[in-house]
Each structure stands twice: as structure tokens, then as C-alpha cells.
Image 1 (cartoon, rainbow, N blue to C red):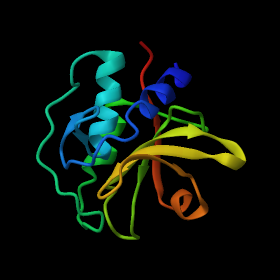
Image 2 (cartoon, rainbow, N blue to C red):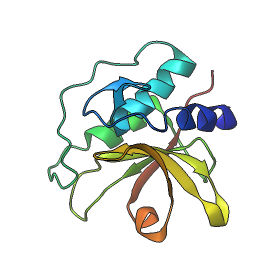
Image 3 (cartoon, rainbow, N blue to C red):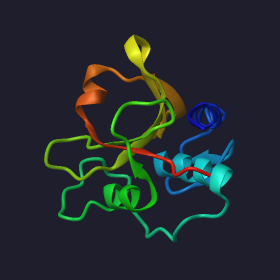
Image 4 (cartoon, rainbow, N blue to C red):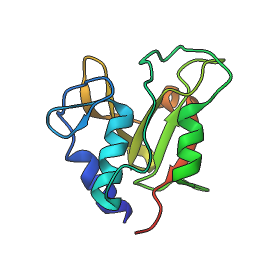
Amino acid sequence: MSGAIVEAARAWIGTPYVHQASVKGAGTDCLGLVRGIWREFHGTEPETLPAYTPDWGEVGQVELLLGGAGRLLRPAPDEEPGDVLVFRMRAGAIAKHMGILAQTGKQASFVHAYDRHGVVESPLSAPWRARIAGRFRFPPL
């Protein structure tokens, strides 16, 4: 299934960034990308989402993104294409970004959506790796 997830994620490349949206080709944010892939493989939305801010530097006690990933996805003990990566963009901030691991090894990359860029595939460079707060897998079909 991991190869199919990567293929599905790459099909979203070029979708514009729209906060809280999740429509391939029309608009999405990073969570919307993962939601869209979930719908493609598992049907309807798994749960209703509360409104959320796009602020990567937001601080607080409640890790909504990590908590939701932990409820709906399986922990990933190793790195595999198709994994959902959750990022903490600043020390002390809550995790507010996510993407799909597309390739591992020296050419590691991930597909994600972010403001002013839309959905892109980026190298999983050392600075991005240092921000990983969690790694998860979609449940089997």
C-alpha cells in the first residue's frame, strides 16, 4: 500500500494552498492533503475536525495534530515511503505541519502543502528531519 500512497500524494502536487481545504486540484493545506489521501483509501472522513490556525509557531499544552494522528494512524517503527510525518516547526511549539514520506535514503523526500507554495515534493533535509515529532502509517485496508 505504501507505493500507492506515495503515488496518491504526488497526484496532489500543484494543488494550491488553501487553509483548512482538502480538494485535489482546487486547494488544500498540509492536513487536507493527508485527509484527501485517507478518503481515497478509506472512504469518508474519520472524524470532524475543529477549526485550527495555520500558525506554525503556536505554543500550548494540547497536541491536537499528534493526538489525532495517534488515534487514526499506526505508529511507524521505521521509515517507509507512504508514512505520515508530523513536524514541530519550532522548539517549544506544538506540532502543526505534516506530509507524506515519498522516498527514503540519500534522496529522501516528502510531499506536503504550505502557504505560497501549494503541494510540493521537498527534500527531507537535515533541518526538516530535526523537526519530525512523529511518524505514522495509514491503517491497512
